[in-house]
Length: 311
Image 1: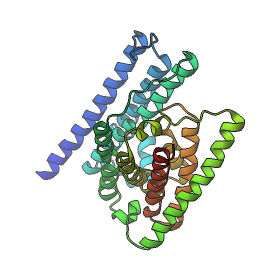
Image 2: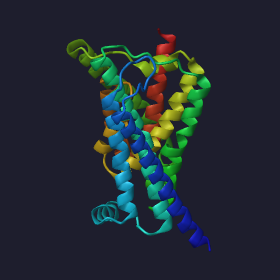
Image 3: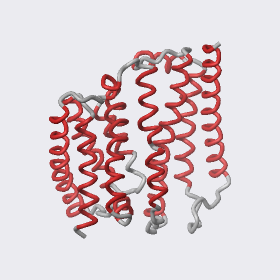
């Protein structure tokens, strides 16, 4: 009886995610074919933004449908590269949930970046972001636990049959040493990225603005510390503990940079990519996620608290 119910749950999850992706695709297609104002204050239809959103929804819908209907190439790839077993209810459930999580995470950042590029380079206007609300920001960070932490943990246990340490690098072995490595890596990373950013700004004319930091700084030190620690924990669990463990340091760093592309500023893409390579190397050498979490959180805190108290 339990097995039948789980099979039903897996089928419902596949249908639910496929429906969301289909409706999203249809929605963006309508926006493209019948241009309307998508953002208040702009008399512009944002064709690149709508096409980008449409493509992302169609791609993820195609992946899910290929899995549901057991298309050979995708199934062969999944069985070779992962422990996924198509037809096993828990694996079917986790695959549909993971497809939705990846679509939710990456499509919004990339398409937002496309929209900002249209505003800056096609319309020739400056971006005006609304001020952040502390409650909304904290709630958003807590909500991100689901795709960044809970889903990887569930996949790690149900699909890979691994412990948290084996699959995500969580463990207390060499804890003090890894904490020290994390702090040292943060300091070195700030120096390296600071030098590279200076070169990009001074010699290549890159923009030095950091929109997200400027918005968080206005909320005060308490929120800055919370965001620093929380983002460091959740993002490292996902990008290093989950993604890098199953792919490689380059893919994890590129995807990490992609999630910082939503402000359309080149430095905010290059810096996370370099940061991802540095802490990805730390993760490979220590085989623990503790160091990267500490490095990420420390770097965030130094940057945000420095901006609050030194400017």
